[in-house]
Structure formats: C-alpha cells, structure tokens
Length: 125
Image: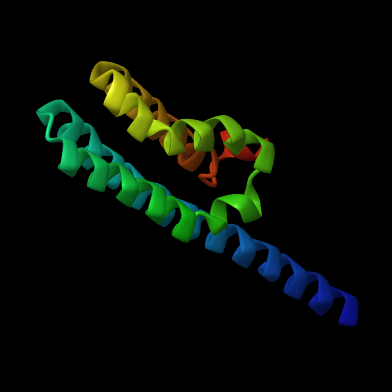
C-alpha cells in the first residue's frame, strides 16, 4: 500500500513540474515577445535613441527572466537565438530592415519554443 502512495506522490510531483515549467516558459516568452514587437515597431519608426533603449530593454529582460528556458530546454539551442538577440543593436545601426527581420526571427523562435512545451499529445509522444 505504501508503494501506491509513493507512486501517486511521484506522479503528482512530475505533473507539478510540468505545469510550473509550462507557466514559467509561457510567461517569459510572452513578455519577451511583447518587448520584441515594441522594439520592431520602434526600428520601423527610425528614432535612434528609442531603438537603442528598446533593444537594450529586450536584452535586459532576457538576461533577467530567461532562467525557466534554461531549466527545461537544451542550452545549446539558445546559442543562435542569443547571438541574434544581443546583436540586434548592431543590425539596427547598419541595416534597419535586417534588424526588423532578425527581430521577427527571435519572436518566431520564442513562440515556437513556447508552443512546443504545451501539454498536448503531439508534444508528449
């Protein structure tokens, strides 16, 4: 009988970890995507100081809140994403159209990662 309770407790713990991971990843991804959308609009408008502030805000937010992604997703996946994110200011200074495209890439990556962590049968199996 004790084994049954231990198994039930472990199952509840595993389900809790999954729910916490999903909530944390969705919260971080949604916040970062909102900042990236704002930065993308700022780049389109062309104000240099506002562009720098918006992109610095995206970088700062990622540094501050990205821990849930690193806890639950392969670290190596973020090499290209972080390289792109932390060079957006360079892209914006050289070619604003390229910066808009790269911001779109960052948003797509985060949305795809958030979607891949949803607890649906397709992602489980």
